[in-house]
Image: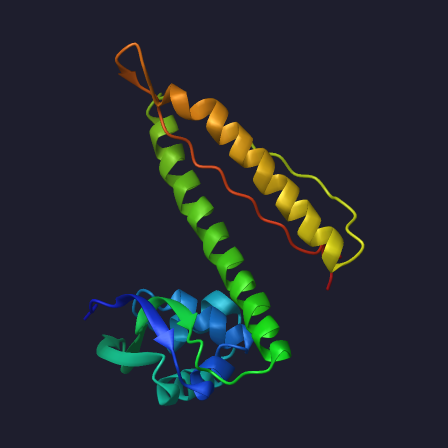
Length: 200
């Protein structure tokens, strides 16, 4: 049922590029790295099955996803869909406006934010299983809010953060192997996005 998919796909069709402009459709494509049905996706994204079927058919028409099989669920036969690739890259030959390209970048970042959050959740659950067995699992989290007035401020913050991480990487890279012992690797992630008010 599950099929091998490309690691990366070059987007050369304006129709495919425009489909990825839609935040919901970009999220659907990202989630379909593994086969899923319209009902599954509807539950995950808190959408109606009818609306999910509409978006799936539109994405299938562009060639970004495909049908990979069916399965019996009670008295229903569910169609399973899967993305054609794990990631997508825009071809330079695409004649898109600068505004459209910026929108693609923004929505791509949001889709990546969802993917990163899901990966952290999976890793945390896996580590908790080890902690339940009595293993010591050192970890740390940090959460803060920073006022960033405009795009220039946001860009400057990212650049400062990257430079700081480069310095930390250089400082601790030599500890990978000392005294014949290999150091444990730790995952470090950064996510930055506008603060949302409760109820929005």
